[in-house]
Length: 544
Image (cartoon, rainbow, N blue to C red; front, side, top):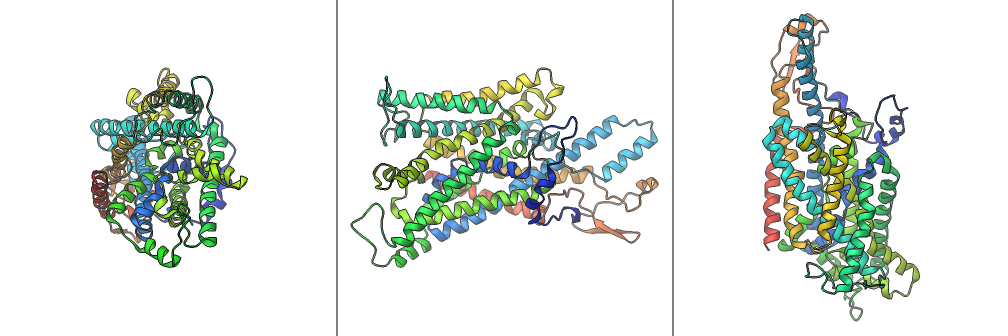
């Protein structure tokens, strides 16, 4: 553990040191800054749009504590995915060592035994472990298939929803009035599987096809090749957050107690009204908020694909702390400011509160800003959609070939198989979105599958991978460098220290460079119990 204690404030400053010269035969990599934007783009997606609504429904203080608690859970489950990846690497290395060892060679036997006592938990740039492969390593094939079924359904519906978001936003806000196309009205998609007006439906389908022409080619380009695009869209996300927050804060300061949708009345005491919103607690509204916040912090299924190109993997433990700290601060600022300003007028999709401003504001700058805010979700999914395709196609590649994409050179036509899978996983949700545009109810239930993918599976993998490493590397390493000392086996004393010949070391051989105080099995089990309760709350929220 001592070797894993990295000072949190130094990882970003030293980022440039990780950009060493590319070695011959080494795959392309990205630095931590680019990796940061990859993960931010994957996690933010469209989930942030409903955060202000969640804050208003639950109450500001209740939503704040809920966001902080769920963010801690999300951060830890993300870190447990990384730990499980490191343990997978150690188990695979150990199995290869045993398979290649010659039982007649005494030196090979000693090397294998020493290797078992010194597990290598170093993540490699040339190898990654998707969740489906880790399920196979630590549980068996049955768990791999179970995970793939749940994940395929979840990610397909998530991409389907993303396509419909882009199509409906463009059809509603772009002046598509030519041929058989006509611009859709604000209510065209409410309560309908598809727009009833034929001209609007044609405009919507035109926008879906346009969206496909953008995201399908992006889904076929390697992650390292679209670094500039992902960074640019990530910066646009931060700019959008800034516009939303600054606009709301400026109005809260200059027009205290003012209702932007009811100009005939102001509150007698703005502080009293704000205090009521901050301190109130609505249980039904809180159940809705739990579901929204969980969805807004989902990253875990994309961690293997998003972290594989990052060269400085030793910083991943701190790296994900920075990612979730950033999203938590952004969500908190957005939720508090917009919910306090728009109050009961807040829309479920927060950017829709700016539609009226975009059409009727007397200020040109405000109209331009509002149009940008309204259209941003559709631009946002252009960067998030390919990332979801990468994550799903990587897992399907393992299903069809039994190999990870970093090992595709071992599979005949491996590159072609991966491209076909990417094209299919990118195209199918877009084809489905041509016919069904409203996925509100389906996505509610698909979100439950996301809870399994991003909370339950990381917890199960963390516990099972610790147990497997405990059984596999069940003897501590001796301080002596003498090979003959390898015969003096010292049993593992879980949670304690072993002292031999004046030397002391920790005996938990399932600890990785990414482990922390939350890695203890008993703490993981507590998180598991909390997750079961959260799942119950989400089901109750959907039922109500």
